[in-house]
Picture 1 (tube, one colour):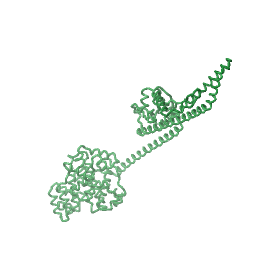
Picture 2 (cartoon, rainbow, N blue to C red):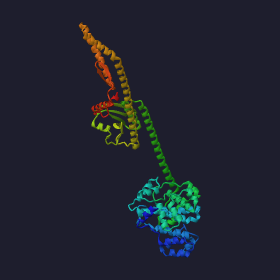
Picture 3 (cartoon, rainbow, N blue to C red):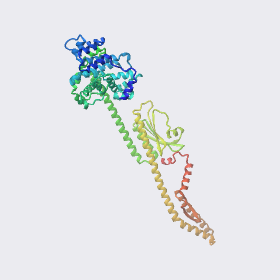
Picture 4 (cartoon, helix red, strand yellow):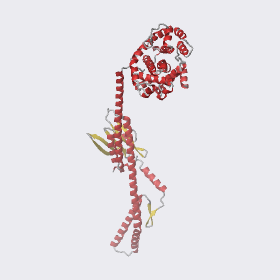
Length: 583
């Protein structure tokens, strides 16, 4: 409420009721006032007195005989009816076309009068003592909309509110608070309190959008508020709103709580036009034209058609999501057993082609700075064809595999990432100048495929590294075993050969050549064992004299240093080792 007061206090020209209308409303609260006192107040304003007599004699208010004097009108009509007439005239005169901003005042007054008449007709059935109060509440329920439009929204911000309501599906209270900062129900309650109107009127104006049918039985004030709410909904439904399209229907639970039936609403709707005409002409408001039953039926059918179309579109979208998920599941299953990069790329592009409904699917993986692997899948009639190969890495291809994509409306891109590094790209290519349906969803799907493919490549690398590690371990074991089994006999052979050569007992040239050949072959065996240990990358080898020994003095720091040197030597490789996965 403090925010409302602050906003209203900043308004330079807040509308006020004419002095005579205010005096009549105040007199109406006095139990000791008589008809002649009220008549004298009305007679002070000649224009008001004439309109009171004309309205009192209109078909909407006419009694048994014609009323020719204001005092006669007060006596015959009663104070409540007179207050209703005076308030109606006063409020309508507060806003004229010269002050028009965004709201169409003709449509606004048609809606207000229609709602007032409908509310009175409903109250006559279910709340007879407050029938005239229902008329006034119906007349005033939206009055703050004009105040907001003309006095707060000086830059025509209320046009955005009307556009939002035209689109439908939104609560006007929420829309007004978001765009303007204040809603018409809260401001209307504040204005009517400022005008010193009865509490039941101020409550009906302030709560007509938020009354719950569970509250209706608690008091007459709540019942009056519910009557105004139902009248507002009925008038909107009949095309008597301030915008052309009005959403929302009357809650059957509220009708039941009020004691109204659907037949009552239908009868009121049919007789509404005649009663609106009777009072609108006297107030100088253009006659309202409620929709006929068949027009309402046509509008309802159109809405049902739109709803049916919307449901059909959602059904198709759901079916597409199901197909996409099916392809993702199938792709994930196939990738589980794929260890080669070529197989992974082929599976991804084939599944992508059908899941994305594109013309061509492509996967590009950067092998090093010089070469890339390109895999493409495309349609040939109703069949899918896939081709894959390596090619020179152009500057443009290197950019794409590093996540720098060219601008294109017919190609969607998603990165392939391994160990947080971009190593490639997958592309979904569509025909040019063909609109892609559900573009945002397809881009999301492509990114998901990219993540699944990246995980498959990462898994293949880890599995392959594990296999290589196992093979290397086997080689290491074989080298150590060979070193253990061969070293002793090999050392003995070399010592014996040296002893024979040094003794000088071997004189025959053929025997000397045989000893040299034996020694040469033994040395070759020694070098072979040494190479096996070095290849295993487990330990280095050294010789103590002629004895080959295992070197256990190699430290982890030395090993890390040597590995660092190897990485420096291969730094030209952006993703080392990818070529190994092609075979």
